[in-house]
Image (cartoon, rainbow, N blue to C red; front, top):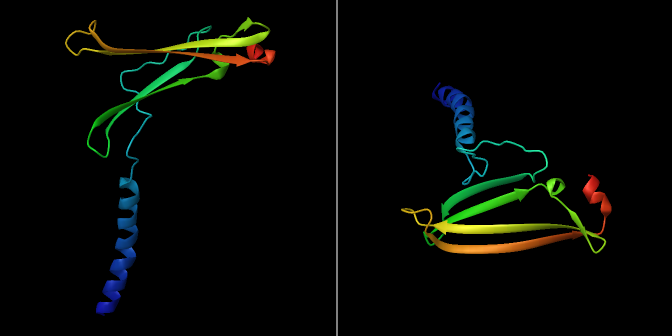
Length: 123
């Protein structure tokens, strides 16, 4: 009799506990959170999407990972020396928390993308 109760308990509780475990699992970082953002596509401008994730590394130091996705087909190409070329400028400014006009650190990166395929401008 005790054996039957134990067996029926396992049959009922095991699936219930399994469902709870599966539902409670999550990734450690969720880059899909878009708090306070509103996406408005403007025709004729590059399609750029940003996301930022803050985390602590293994030494317990804070880091911010900023990701910019630029849709290749939305970049603006010009012809330079018979090649299609798009230029990107990425500027990172770290501002003071008290005064946003006080730039503590500034970094500027220039990127040039060259394409020999003229089809890139008609895609």
